[in-house]
Length: 264
Image (cartoon, rainbow, N blue to C red; front, top):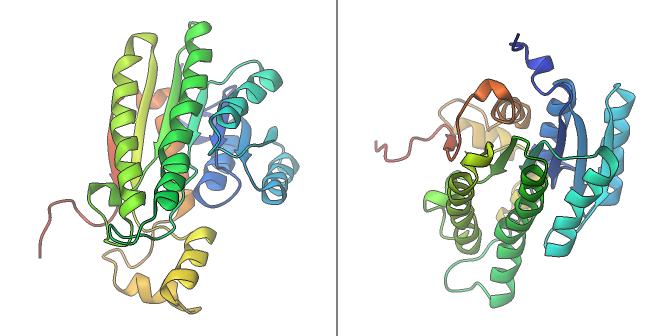
């Protein structure tokens, strides 16, 4: 019988969360453990990564931190290899790493552009390459969710390189989903809107001169009266990773409170 409880949706699955040491990625790791998965978390920051793993194991889960600079394709692929070495396979992959440093069309340097491509497009490409290769070699089904952004539809002027790379990830998600549908590998993307995370707090303060009340001020301007919440996103990602999302593949879901094309 197929489970219908969130707690068992990923029972026995091995989940790799790329860029999962904080923010949305960390929330996804927590939700995956609650859903019964064994979780590997990859990222550059050893301190937060190991702290998250300690939290997950203290709560009764099984978790592993994989130190990896995902901007380096070899380390991105190596995060999959390390997970396979530890647990024998990768059943589910989440690409949640993201770089949101600001740049417009006129002031973005080649170095900034390359940095965005490296994290926001190249890292998921080569992590998926390694994960899908493992799934195909085992002739086993698998699921992948790419965390993208609602800004990929056009975005703000100060996010030019970010939008360019993330829009590329939308195309990659659809291409890979089409290419591997007969392998029973389902690949979907989530275009998340403005979300309350540690990284967003740092970004608002560094680039927009925000004070301690920026969350409240932002919430007042949003239709639902709050920013997106990582735990809510995480629960939906678990659903997409699980068998309960059925045959869905190649879908890009807008997780936002603003409606694309809607005008006041």
